[in-house]
Image (tube, rainbow, N blue to C red; front, side, top):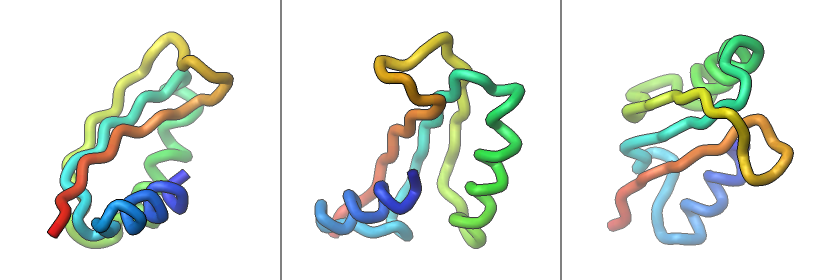
Length: 74
């Protein structure tokens, strides 16, 4: 998940350290937030961006998480 975002950012002329905001949509907050939060801590060890985590009923594909990432570009 985060690896794909890193590649998209780099292809767009940005980078991981330029992320300023992340919106996270989980379909099962109770079961998935602990795992997601551990990954977050691993990938954002210093100066994490703003984060909003929202539980939703479903996503358009059979996945349990979707991210909206905003980053700056030089």
